[in-house]
Length: 75
Image (cartoon, rainbow, N blue to C red; front, top):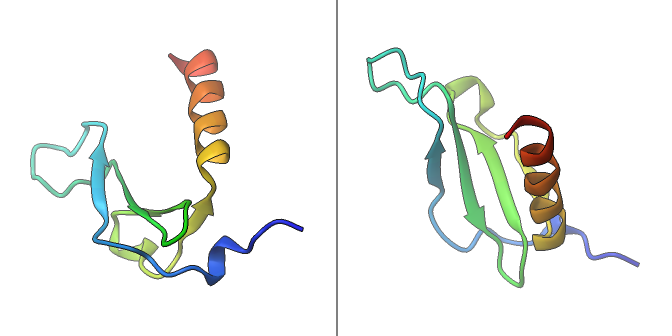
């Protein structure tokens, strides 16, 4: 049985990973914020106010696999 990442506490502040396109107003409209989870894993969320309280949680293997596949298709 896999562990439930949504039961883990967030271990620190969220860090913004921005991809540009902020329209020059520093609103950070194109950022994903990421924080590690206690005991492993990551919580990701949108930097827009509408994304508040909505997180996606992934294990290290899941986020690494996603990033590799994304780069293959879009890099």
